[in-house]
Every structure is written in C-alpha cells, then in structure tokens.
Length: 160
Image (cartoon, rainbow, N blue to C red; front, side):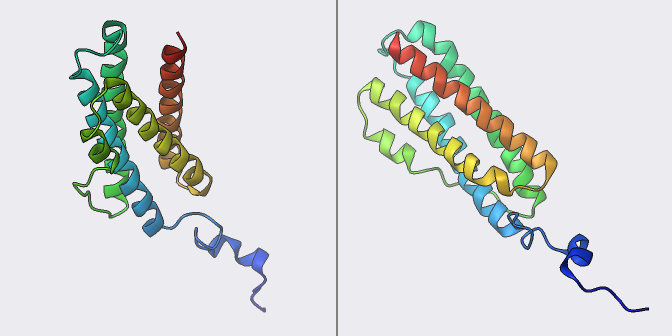
C-alpha cells in the first residue's frame, strides 16, 4: 500500500515553526526581553515610591505598590517559562532604567513607568498569536491584560 505524502496527510508531523508558531529560540529571546522589561518596571515602581514629593502620592502609593507586586509576579512567571524552554536568565535590565536615573521630576518617572508597560504590551501583542503552548499563552495573556489595566488606571489618574 502506498504511503501518502501530501501536505494535508503530513500536517500532524509539521513543526510549530512550519505552522507559523514561534520556535523555542524565538520564544526564549522574547521571554528574555519581557523579563528585562518586568525587572525594569519593578525598579521603576520602586523608584517612584521613593519620591515622597509625588503629587497625590498617598492615593497613588497603593497603586504603585500593586504595580511593583504585579511586575514581580510577572517576572517570576516569565522566568519559569524561560527555564522550561531551556533558556537562561540574564541580569540585564531594560534600558528604561538607565533613562530614569537621569530623570529628576517624579512625573517624568511615572511617564517612564507607563512607557515601560506599554512596551511590554506591544511586545506581547506581537508575540501572542505565535505562541502555541496553551499554558504559556494563558500566562502571557494575563500579563498583557494586567498591564493594559494599569496603563488605563494611570491614564485615568492623569486626567483627574
């Protein structure tokens, strides 16, 4: 009996990359970038909390603490997935933190934190359609949603 070799008959053997999904190397690189952004976000939130002269810090302080916890949680989730894929954690932090060191006005630091989160959201929006692993996809979607909510809250605070 002849073996079938048509593409439709062989689809179950096709690799994720062939099917348009990100391969392990691409996922490891993307997770590494996201980890750097989360590390930077956590540091930015900490630095903003250190600014006692922020306008309206008392009401916003809990939001900043929540953002810092959220970045720490996201960092841990991303590291777990990175290690599961065979990647290694780096100690690098996104360049945003270097930029913040030169910022003296507290509002500028908050803007940098928002830009950092926006960068994470954009990266996640690009990556998510190419993630085949359900658990990784679910976790990345949750991180994206939490950052979108935080960006919205920051926008609401700026308007009021």
